[in-house]
Length: 191
Image (cartoon, rainbow, N blue to C red):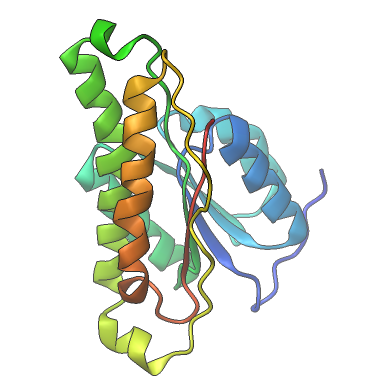
């Protein structure tokens, strides 16, 4: 993978859950394209190779557990300090608890909701606090639909299948408050 020099017109992506899977792959593609990325993860050591490949003017790696509001604030503040803006937020952090809904402990189900629902909600609250509604009203934002899909609940994914649509429902109405100068919020499905 070769480093592409970012331009002043490159977008700044704030992506949660970049230590593996879709989050890491998206980060790699965006960096190769020349965009700037704030790659957040609980296990930042998984991003060491990318840190060696891309300059700090293009890649910021930040420790982030989306269930920790202080870490959300710190990661977002670091993003603004490093790049001066955030254009696109991708709430990708997550995991699935497997088991029939009646066999999953309440503790595991609540933890699933903390990560799948409240984590992204708190990320978006932090984003909206940085971009007041007045900024949105003065701009001409481009907004992409968060998601349009049919949910198929599998018997062994009850907690996950319940939390994911709630996140989608919660984020969609917030679009006017998080869309200053073309800010976009994306949600990734792990189905």
